Length: 531
Image 1 (cartoon, rainbow, N blue to C red):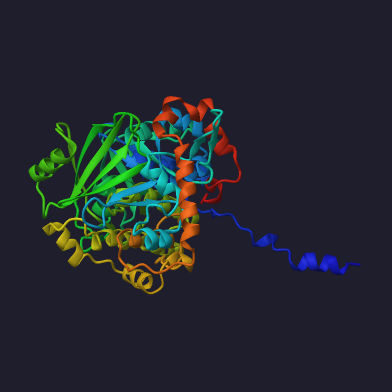
Image 2: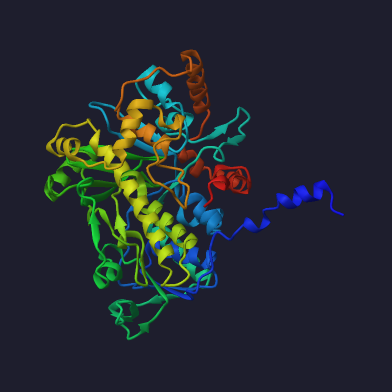
């Protein structure tokens, strides 16, 4: 006879409410058109999370990779090393990333002014009220201002790493990353077909029936993932999927990219510098800095952009001009095609969203994978989730342009007067009414998400709005004495912190076991934020 305890255990048994994160599907084959970062990451994720689907990549070795420095957000770390199972030691040896604590914005107010946007929560309200700046809001920000990282040296020479507690992302040389991912695909026996697609065949219902290549192959799959970049060879060119431009919010459409030596100074942040007709990124690699002057051809021609760059960064000779458009397609999934990366859309380089949006779309596809092409509800949910996420990024980036008062050129006058920030206007209104937003977790303007975001949440909006001094300071609960005691601790810790140059020169990640310690620890932000 069952006891009361037995009945209690039975009543609260929810074991059958636990489902797989990644549903089964009737889709058996997927062809990814285009390698590159988005295509390779998608192939690795689908093979790992949907192993019953045979996934292949079709790419042409004739089409070169755009070799610019890639700045990322924190999602990339758990995605690479936990979701995809990429070995951190091999990754660091072969890709040689640098660590990024956040973004330093030369932005917001006139003159020699900057604010730091990082991935760690902090006392932004207190810093803004007591110091008219948010750059002492947390230890990450202080580290950024001193070109340091959260690895401390004791008096006896031993090291204390706090990388497990301070979120970071990577700065990556795109060519190194592509080479590494290509090698990883081959090691995992994911087919790579070296061919150029010359024709997209469709059936009577406009579904893609096959891809014809320049070497005479006719390739057929259940699902086609378009990673062909801005050409959007299948999603847009073949299926005529409607494109939704973001040009009422983001008017930039070109970047002048170039490199400069770093002279052994490796900043632990991406730098975004306000320019006359846009802004310039600085992404620190181990030997050099990668830059890109992002601007609008409505206000700036190539000669003007180059002249401004040389005045600020020195005698630049080698450079590339990269064209882009801001916007997204109305549908990510149309017929039997899924658009990913630039083939689906592009916001703009500000806030390093290129890989972030690709990872989000990949994980959303894996989690909401339709059962078949007649599963209209799943397809609609997938399209809405991705569209809302992209629109959220659009409005968030719009805030940067709407409130940047550093320069008063015609370009920036237009941005302040005309930038459409859409749904983010409500967030700005909330901030003005009840700052900080993070006190009540207000400010995330996505109605739901299949992938909890570590960035662009309420703390992100607080950082951006305080940093640009959008509202008057409001007296915080924390007394000034307590606030100053914390900033004193930040400064004292920073005195003992290493630079990235020291970390890499002495090979401490390996010789002192810091990397192994970080990724073997089960209690880290990396484990907590895995999708």
